[in-house]
Amino acid sequence: MANRSKRNKRKMLTGLALISVLGTSVLAGCSSSNDKEANANTNSNTNTNTNTNTNTNTNTNTAAANGNSGKAANASDGNFHQEGMPIVDKPVTLNVLTIRWGNMGDTFTKNAWLQDLEKNSNVKINWQVVSSNDWPDQKSVMLASGKLPDVIIGDQAFGDSDIVNNLEIFRPLDEYIEKDMPNLKAAIQESPELKKLSTFPDGKVYSLPARLPSRPMSGAQPVINKDWLDKLGLKAPETIDDLYNVLKAFKEQDPNGNGKADEIPYSDTKDLDVNLLAPFGITDLRGNHMVVKDGKPDYYPTSDAYKAGMEWAHKLYAEGLIDKETFTQDSTMLTAKRQNPDAALIGFTYQWTPDAVFGPWSKQYETIAPIAGPDGNKYQIGDPSGLSFRRNEVLITTTCENPDVAARWADQFYTGEASIQNFWGAIGSSIKKNDDGTYALMDPPDGTSADAWYWDSSLRDFGPKYASPEFEKNIKLDPSSGDGLKLTLDQLGKDYVTTPFPDVMYTAEEYADLPTLTTDIESYIASTRAKWVTKGGIDEEWDAYVKKLNEMGLEKLIKIYNDAYDRFMAVK
Image 1 (cartoon, rainbow, N blue to C red):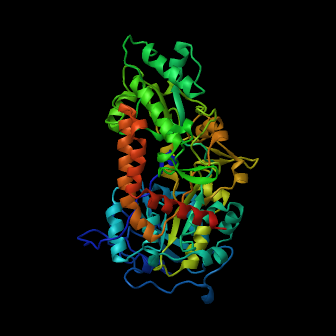
Image 2 (tube, helix red, strand yellow):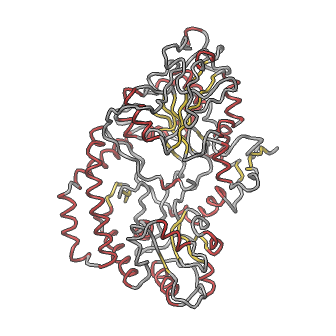
Image 3 (cartoon, helix red, strand yellow):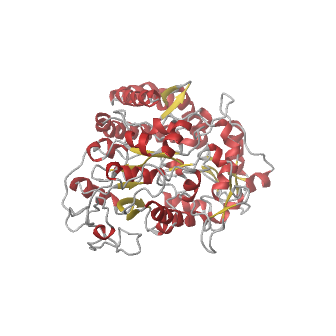
């Protein structure tokens, strides 16, 4: 989960089937301006929902959902304030849904910043916390039933296609940003990417964005076994020729010293990691085979660069420098090789950080600068704007009776201090605010990893945030671990980060076409890649390969990508 750059492919849902509930609890909610009413019905499902108010029980069927929602707060009745605190004079309850990984649970709701916001704003939050394991089924039920919470937090709940295909249940937020959200409005003016990212194909904003604090520009970076380099008297490779020579030495000169020819220069699972082709200018951040070349979108599987990369990969494979099981082994088999108990076996890979996957051998590995390609240039996957931007972090549904209240509540998250407290944890418990105005992370409890602690203490990657580049200068992270380590490693790659194909959105019609087109085309590309790497033959088969892709609808697919790109770039 730390490697948020791998969030590449969003599931494309083309429609919804009405399914029976059959005992599955439906997460429902309409806001109430009376706490007692909002929590009167206490039919609970403790596996999925949590209410943070101390005087309430876990509740999926609120009074609002049962038609007893109380009077909505709005600007005309005097209860709602467009500026300052409290947001409302009389308490208003919002039912807020969020999805958490696996069994993480609701500990984040104890975050002191969230609790202070509730007290100061008079906006009470009935948190409905669902495990990612349970959410797919519950999402289908929710959408089919139309029983929705007021607010949805986090982009794990609804993806682009869910929203585009169900616009009638999500409020356009443009007017609320303009009149109720000065913090977000200022953030958009400072970082226009937020507006581009959040504008849907019809020109409206239905979901709110985030800019996470202190994120790197570089995604996965080259990682090599430094102990092996040192033992063989080798320098870290700088070019693909260097890399070839190093991998060959790893294979032939017993760098792990166990007297066995068991070293595996490079290994992967089910396919070749596209990052191995980065020296050829292929840096596919979105995982959709699209890159930006000379300022224009380019579909790389039919490019000369891809062909050259395949020829190079075949050379490595033919000489035993790529694991023979790369295209057949699963992740469990690969992990067993990476964490082999007797000796380190793997020489080279691409990872978020060098300590990510090698278990007991982690200290043997180091991150190195990008490998220069045939043209002499270095290319690093990532984003020059930082791997910071997200969308779909806040949705306000059409069943929410207090959208102005919800918008003002969400706007409180779009400050620097609010953002870091909802990414790492509250000031005083997870973050220390120094006298000079800087911020430092506190040590986690004994026996707890820093990343796990941050997830327990905050919304972490999910939810609205905006830490400006200027504010980030005041954040002081430990350069030896966690987020601080990644920023340190980023210094090796950030100057070579390429502009990625943007995180575009598609129309409902495009979403209807994409699954069939991408499934067939990507399957064919993957199968030919496996064949060309393991057996060669790309020169003889290239023309037929391109022809076959066109017959499968490649031109239509590329048009969809280009149209989405043009819409994204046209947003001002």
